[in-house]
Structure formats: C-alpha cells, structure tokens
Length: 81
Image (cartoon, rainbow, N blue to C red; front, top):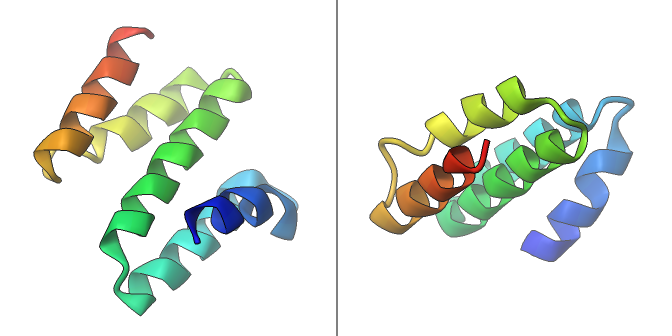
C-alpha cells in the first residue's frame, strides 16, 4: 500500500503536495497509521528532491510527537540538512 501511495501521490494532482495530502488523508481515514507515517516520510523526501528544505523540515518536525522510531528517522534526516 505504501509503495502504491508513493507512486500515485505525485501524479494524481498538479502539485505533488496535494497528491500526497490526499493519499495520506485517505490512508488516515482507513486507520492505517503505519502506512500514514511512511507516506509522510515519502512526502518529506519528495520535498528534498525538489530542494524545498523548509517544506521537508516542516514535515520532519511533525514527527516530534509520534513513535520513537519515527522521531529518530526524522531527526536523522533533519541533521543532514
């Protein structure tokens, strides 16, 4: 499911942000929290690919109150910026 979301999110809307937001919201409504978090990480990675560091940092900071492993992954990514 996560791989499918990563593939279609940048393509279903004109702006990749809107595509990811739609996919993430759909997964959230389905109650699949782990897939939601993975898609959030993919969204942040997409920001990095577009060289939008502020957007990536904003997404990574949203992991501060989530699972310990996700916080660690987000912190690692932020440290490289």
